[in-house]
Image (cartoon, rainbow over all chains, first blue to last red; front, top):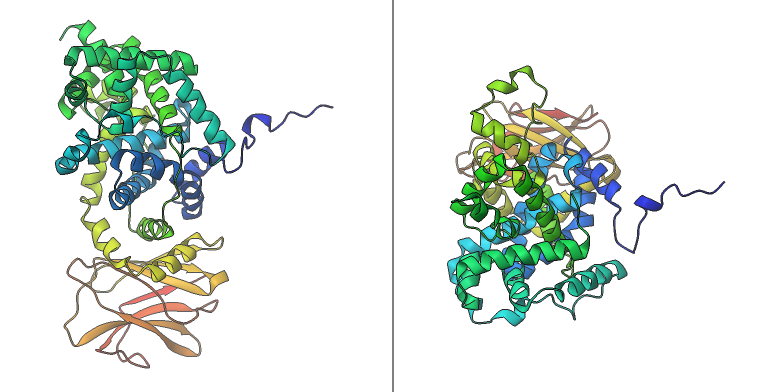
Length: 199
Length: 253
């Protein structure tokens, strides 16, 4: 008999935890299981820290926000609903939100990079090589990004990777705020379609 | 704002690019508009893929130790009373309407973060504890104890006020005590930790309590199976045997 049992949940590349395992860990974290939390941390903290540091740049602040995120995971795991999205989605969304909050709340560091400009907010190509999986994900996004107009791409990158608000993005790109809103939406819809995201 | 204007914010919202007030207004719109809601869900999932395209970076081990050290004193939210017959009394109609949408993890965060701040009383507790964690060797030990496969967490109450949690890993013969709400002592006194069994009490280190009433410490020496852990008040410098009645005793299994 042919066995296809674990194919769907299997590890797809070194270091990549299958979604089902993460969900199971999160369920256990919701029951105050510290060992499960420890495993979940090991599995996802490089993702969380990498993303936060992408936005904040500053190592110490990135550690602080990573800590906030993981304590929030501990506190709110009881509210995680697996029917409404995976563990990675839940956690990375939380991480981005927290990183953006931190960026917004530290105005002084905002001025830091208004001048650095847009080139810095492209997805870093050179640094992405750790695992095949990460590389593939990266290339998929990179490719999808090329389907956007220049303005869409810049607006989306500044907002997501820079943590800038739409009005800041408008200022940086010297376009009306209404245009930025539309470009963020068109751009994200295009990415959604290119990346095959469905709800 | 017209409905069309509202819908056009879905991209900015999914990217966290709205300011707090705009986001709130948009959420009110979302609560009533299923189509936009679905769009935002998809765009937020798309944003996660942008996040997964970032190169992962492993944070320093000290960070994990610091986080693990805080779990025992960080309360978890109750599960949502979804099927409770009393749920209809849970809040205003507006809240109830949003709840359907806000149960989605993507946006639940905003509301929950505020609730958490209330429950844990802000970052004060967290910061107070993380100050200790600069002693990172000890923090690493604590993390190891908490992460051990046989790690157990035992609770106790302190006479005169305060709660204690003993984290014990028999495989490591090590334990750590985490307390909150304990009284500070005069300068000439310290709290002393003891391993207690039929043979008597062995000293396991001393500690003091700051104004915030919080402390955690890895016990000195080795804990043997069946040992209870006790705390007494002793003269500055500690004693070789307890001289007062314990304010806390936690028995291990």
